[in-house]
Length: 298
Image (cartoon, rainbow, N blue to C red; front, top):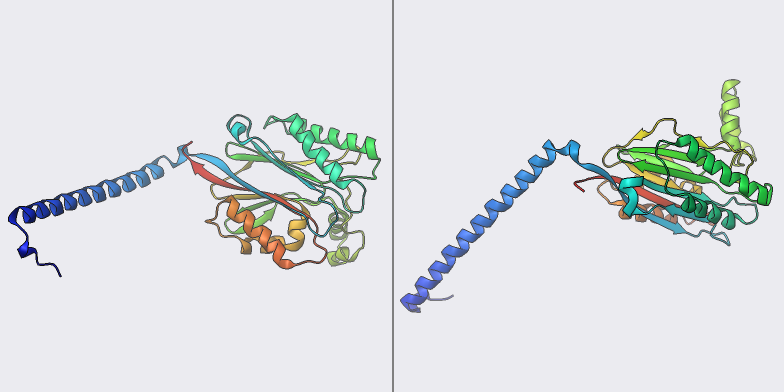
């Protein structure tokens, strides 16, 4: 304990003044901090409609048990997103065929060369993808191929394009939805079985079920695309991935691996570790671009 009665009167006065000044400064700081917080919160609520939706982006590109990495990713320049929108794509070389990694890399290189893209030109962009597929066909004549999924986000809207069985997943309100249907035999058989009143579970037993009916490398391919842009909202999560991701972590379980307060990097890391944790001895290559929509003043 200190006996302040032993201090000279001048020292006691100086100590008292210092305490008063500190108290005034602390109270002033507290008032300013509370005022700034309240003002910021009120301003955000009033002007929420004026905030821009921006893309928080991360990715992973992992080699599974295959000899080669046959996945390839494309991410457009972030610095040009305000003018040209943001594009993310994943191409997966087809297993069982030759030169899968060469074709998937050719696809993403071609997307790079054709950048930028017009957002409201879905037919034109689909034709560009079809032309890439035709060139692959002319080179390999169905002995090589790849899948392609691509999203184009501009302002608060998104278009997508798809060939094959890779994934475009939208997670909203804790629910994951596959936006593109898989262009494989199982999809075709389920459609035919359901139209004929046949139990669709038999479709899953067919050995051809996973075989693709359309892909990059097919002549005059049918590119799936949005006819109208999809409206995006704050905290929407878009995953553009190869099927190696959902083979390990099914669509209905993918939300169990993420927390919705995470940024894109945290979500990508959680999904990647979720795939690793499965320890599948036949794990395919698994790659994805993860996009989280956030509000920003800039």
